[in-house]
Image (cartoon, rainbow, N blue to C red; front, top):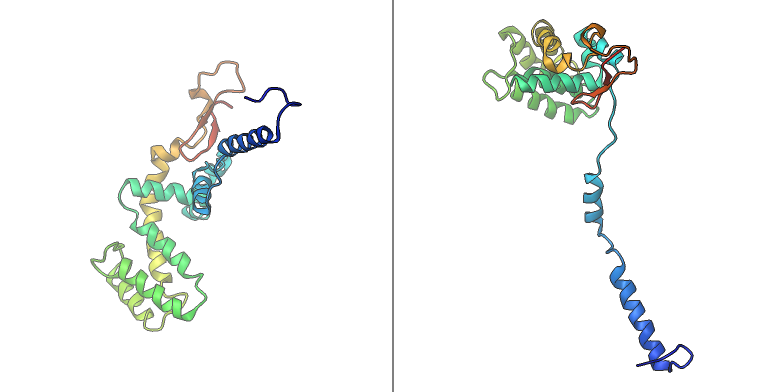
Length: 208
């Protein structure tokens, strides 16, 4: 064995350095390859977006106000999926996306896809359109334009406005996102109140 640093021969010093190098190497965290780094990055929880009570209240103004708000649209889609009746809003969203198309070639392809998926009678996600509107839409596709689905989309919007939108406003999902009335909250003299987080990541005050 080697005793004392001053008395160490060169061979002992070399062995000590080699051992230190091996230990340091073993203690190092393995370098992740790009795929592993990407996977770890996806696992990180995204920041929670809080929805204000004022924002939720605007959803009661009209269906247009609800659908023009990203969080409102997501809430409405979630509600319709819970009722297994999401084909109308999906068609409406497909039409909105269709209007953003800039390529003429893509326009025709997208138009046929939307028509076959939602408009054709007995299609996979058939929406509730009258026969005249179906025929008008079919004729529009002979020369597709950004307005090919305008009438069909308008009819579906009116249908949702009269039916599913009213049910949404009465649903537990929506009501739970509204601030509760002060009279229903046994908060006493505490004005700060506790905070409640909805399933959409909204922190709502329970007391005024």
